[in-house]
Length: 552
Image 1 (cartoon, helix red, strand yellow):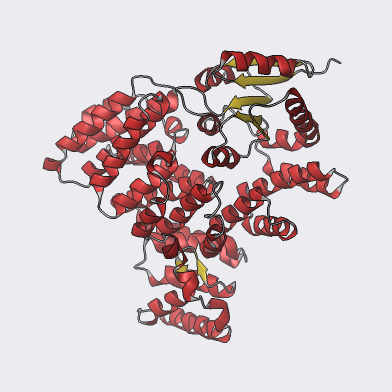
Image 2: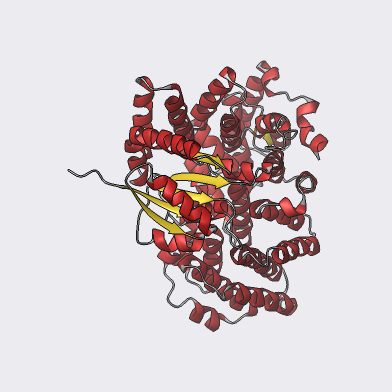
């Protein structure tokens, strides 16, 4: 039986470098190699062929960089979990290296490289790939539990030191994607106890702590990373995420001021815009988006993304205005959407444009036009779209009285949000969804639903899962004392001083003067007694309370 050739895609805008790389790889063995000059060409290639490995340069001329393309193609599911990612770059700037490391490439090679370096790195990767391939195939088939079992079984056997590290890295990412945050925290802490210089373990631990609601622990770790050029900008982004989650928008803005405006990534720019928006400083939000848009004029894909963000901001301003004051905001939004739509990349982008234009028509009071724009749109189209487009679809279908469609997409948003393991995406999408649910009058209904789901988990002794649902219920409707009491019950049962921005002792004080039913009053008194028996477990120092303010 013939051995199947490994399919490799090369993405390099420099013709000479691309030909040399192809020649050097072919000298290693029998590979099936396709070459592309940019991410757009790679995207088209991925529609007809599945590659085992993508070898990509960071800088791709006047296009999105390699990291942005890999993120986009992964989100669009054109790059599979089993696809190996090899990055090349001659750019040694800390911001560049940090961006590349953030997407967990299998190999990073700094140019100029020698043939020996390329061969050694690729041979090691292909050797590991053959060992880890069953786990990767499980991931391609959306069977993460089986992938995790395979990794665990392999770690029980004999592996070289380097291979073991690769298996552990994959295990950490699998634990996070499966929302087993406590296990992920234990894994990363174990690595750092043996060697405190393992950077990927630092970021893995920070992500696990953040997603498990231990934001104070994140701040403790981030504090030590802001002095390092390689990690400082990313650390500031993380810190800003925490502060926005705590609704400390002024502090989040000041933290992001530590990053030069030119160095703000698209996600970091969105964070800063949200910080401005929540402080009622729309002029500054628009000014920042306009500046980022103009500074990326030659990079079409990035220019379009900033253009859409600016259009969305004008739409949000129109939503929050009375009818006779909406016209200039809607005009600006529609012009920007049209500007960004001149080169539609794919169906996702088309759906994004159409739902935004339909929303603009609704806000103008023209339901017939909105109906025409989305005439051929299905729930499936919306479900496969970006989260922001899904939210637009919910607003449009509710506005047109198509409640069944809107609710179906609404339920899918929850599933997608819970599966997000990117902290900035989670904060941005969570904030947008919370605002939408409140504006559509859905927050009370959802609060009751997630509280009931939390009670089922609590009674099943799944406290770490229940606490997130009780937190959401309180966030959606803080006027119901029972939601706060359930959150407090969870915190006291697992002896936690806080969860995200909620502090146990503050919740105790808040409920002290609330009107409670007799059964809830009895429960509250029992919780207070339990907390008073272990006061040290719930006390926080002044230093920990004000740590981010020192950074800002």
